[in-house]
Image 1 (cartoon, rainbow, N blue to C red):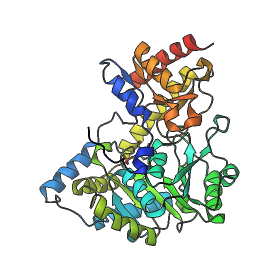
Image 2: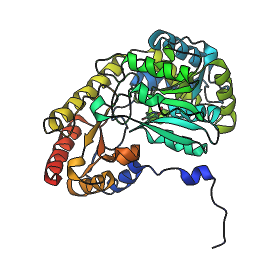
Image 3: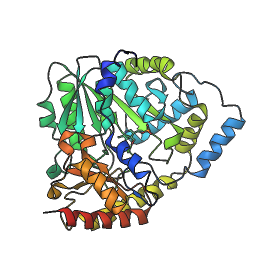
Amino acid sequence: MTDVKPLSRGAERMPISGIRLVMDLAARIPDAIHLEVGQPDFRTPPHIIEAAHQAAVDGFTAYTPNAGLDSTREACAQKVRAENRIECATENVLITVGSEGAVASAFVALVDAGDEVLVPEPGWTNYAMLTHAREATPVPYILREEDGFVPDPAAVEALVTPRTKMLVINTPANPTGAAYPAETVQALVEVARRRDLYVLSDEAYEKLTFGPEHVSPGRYDADRVVTAYSFSKSYAMTGWRVGYAVAPERIARAMIQLQEPYYSCAPSVSQKAAEAALAGPQDCVREMVDAYATRQEIVLDTLSPTGFVTYSPSGAFYVLVNIRATGMASYDFAKECLAETHVAVAPGATFGASADGWIRISVATSTEGVREGSRRILDYLRARSA
Ligand SMILES: Cc1ncc(COP(=O)(O)O)c(C=O)c1O
């Protein structure tokens, strides 16, 4: 083989997703119960599919402007003003390829090599991946089980250095399911203001809260917060690849410009589907939220009495299960649990080094799957605990 140069430093440093490793193993087990992925088991509501079909028939099959269709941007801006209480004009909105497109674009627009980015741990792996891709350093702020995985703003502030550029906030959170109270969100934004940091607020799970109202950081300072929103989880639209960013105008302009070399624009038909999602009836969202809440209850009823779950998640569709009593590393646990019980779970270590004492269960699968899967995990945990 001829010698070839290495990949870019960012690509070489990017962590591998432990969830993907488990998914590949689970794919070889036909009767596996899939509690490892955050993929809603619901279909996209029919009125959204119908609107997309009609849009395709009507000729919405071409490139759109980089920022997205004006009608879609305006619909998003209206929703953000009304529901998220963020000051927002159409110019502040860009339609992106999933909310991931908004998150990634914010990193490119705001983070340089050598910067530090404060990321939640346990937290969604992509924040660390993107930080490495920018040749910047992820600095984890630790979320503690005894605090219900809600961040301590003073502890976050203690991590700020002259190199810190951005603070990532994710509420409701993946993988903990914690939805942060208003005073925590406000205090985190105040840290950012005091220390002159940008905030990237990932609100992919904004509509999935059970009880507490979702609180958007952008409500407290629209000048330094970039927010990423998704249709994937709220409307079961993961495959449509559409989301949007809300940003101060200067940042929005840069992010819109970046769409050109990256992917030009979000899919045109998906943008019309997104408009239909916002304009149409919202009972579909309520039905899905109720189902996720019921399933989280099933997990808690099964695993809390034995102390394997010690907190109450109040959003998203995940629960972190404490596996420390087994003494096993989370990836070994996930592999062996899959082999022995045919239940696939996500290893905690994939959400940060300090999260190796947990596994994540996703309840975005059938209620029966969640019930049976939790029961098998309980039996397995009992058998492996000292
Ligand atoms: C915290 C978080 N943000 C963003 C996303 C990506 O969502 P989208 O499909 O809108 O790109 C996910 C997907 O799992 C997620 O967990």
